[in-house]
Amino acid sequence: MTGPGGRSDVATGFLMDNYPPQPVTFVRGEGSRLWDVEGKPYLDFLGGLAVTSLGHAHPVVAEAIAEQARTLLHVCNLYGTTIGPEVAGTLDRLIGVGGQVRPAGEPNGRVFFANSGAEANECAIKLARKWGGGAGRGRYGHGRYAVVSTYGSFHGRTLAALAATGQPSKHEPFQPMPEGFRHVALGDIDAMDAAVDPRIVAAVLVEPIQGEGGVNVPPEGWLADVRRLCDERDVLLILDEVQTGLGRTGDWFGFQHEGIRPDIVTLAKALGNGMPIGACWARAEVATAFVPGDHGTTFGGQPLAAAAARATLAVMEAENVPVRATRAGARLSEGLAALPGVTSVRGRGLLLAAELADRPSRDVAAAALDGGLVVNPVTPTAIRLAPSLLVSDAEIDEALAVLERLVSC
Ligand SMILES: Cc1ncc(COP(=O)(O)O)c(C=O)c1O
Image 1 (spheres, rainbow, N blue to C red):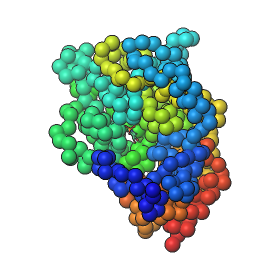
Image 2: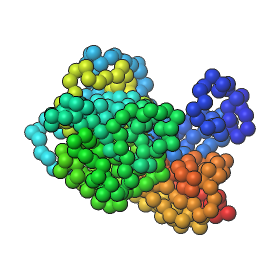
Image 3: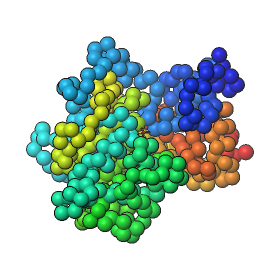
Image 4: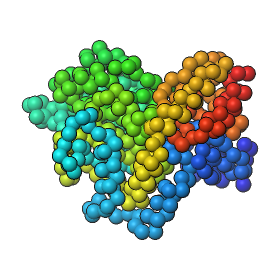
């Protein structure tokens, strides 16, 4: 049964009211296309919020999931499995260590598998607190537990990740927030300098590009300055690559554009191409702060999610998705900038936002959906585009043609 505009009449009254009314109900996807309950096709330029980086129903990923489902879905982390460690090795290789050479076979870092971006960040925050000694019992004779992040950031909805998220309006209904979180303006190195008190700060947590906050790119060199500051004060630098990671910005990771060395990297979204999986990588010396019993999860790194991640990473490497994102991103961003109703385009690779001249982004996104294009209003005045990294030139041109009709009128 369907309602107007491809909206399913399947009773949604059993769901909590967390999300705004959903205008369309999707039932199928393939590549960059989605279909709603009425069979209407859409061009997906949001990718499930930067998740389906290889497009929908990628045959290699689909087959890996089906095969793993027939073989071994789950065992808990009390026992060994083979796929998770393999995926961890691939992530370690892709993250690299900025020129630091370790003996062959020795990991640069170690990975904890989670189930989402928020959980990956929870792991990072707990690891930083353990590394810093926590309040009152640190290796410097005092505890270092505080985390500094930026206003406008988004790190997830669990309580610590929410506290790190630099959006006070999202904290408001859930006060009191956990202690030990500070925020500074993105790109303001003086504010960062003032906030990173080495007596209590264990880590700085930043997105290389703020995704949910509006696709905000910090000034060039800022991240390198933050790295320098962290080095001077022996403070960890955590890169939240949940949205920017795995090729989306035109490099494997957003921090690699700045040539810096991370202490901790968090990932999720694209890692399973739609299968829920998150990961927290930490430099080997930092990772050893965790000992058995410190942190865990029932599902993290289980065979089904790990098989999806292994297949996703294999296709990503074979397709060289960072290069594809750079090339396709240039075409999309030039096309957007040329639209009469667009005042500016920001972002990198295939994580882009188009600032609109005089139409609210909500209206444009709704009209685009009507016209068969999925984008989202990332701020009241800008739409976000995060299509599959395998998007074709023809699909980019098609999306631009839909937007041209909307933003120019
Ligand atoms: C940068 C960043 N970190 C963390 C998260 C939270 O991820 P999840 O929704 O999987 O918990 C998001 C989600 O949008 C994100 O963009």
